[in-house]
Every structure is written in structure tokens, then in C-alpha cells.
Image (cartoon, rainbow, N blue to C red; front, top):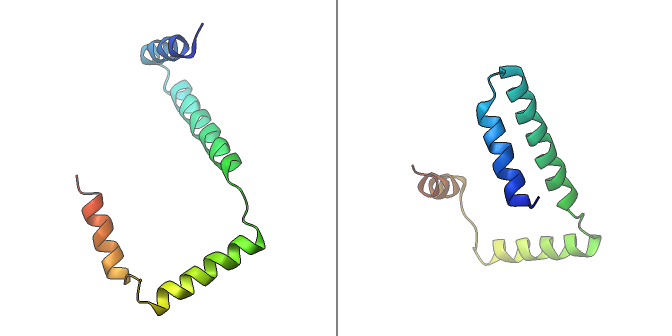
Length: 82
């Protein structure tokens, strides 16, 4: 069975569920596994990479390439308007 068929079968089975506890457990499992996948995809920075990022941040500050907290909040409000 290919992944598409597995997903469709799972969705069909899930939609038929009536047991709230089982639905909550499946949701918890899904969230936990997604978190594991995300965390495993993270790669620690080397000291050299960290220093480069710090140097770039300091350069951006010196050149005025920064945003105030209010500006950042406004950008996110506009971006996430629904």
C-alpha cells in the first residue's frame, strides 16, 4: 500500500471514530511525533557559525538595519490578518 492510500484509509477511519479519548490520544501522539521530527531536524551551530551570526547582527545594528518592537508587532499583525 502506498503512502497516499495509507493516509486516505487513516483519515476515513479517524473520521468514523466516536471515542473522544482515542481521538485525544491520537492527536497527542501526532503532536508528539511531529515535535520529535522537528527537534531531530535541528542542527546545533558551531562556535564559528555563532560568531559569524553575532558579527552580522552587530554590523546590522551599526548600519541601522533594525526594527523596533512596535514595528515587528505591526509587521506580524499585518502578516497574520485573517
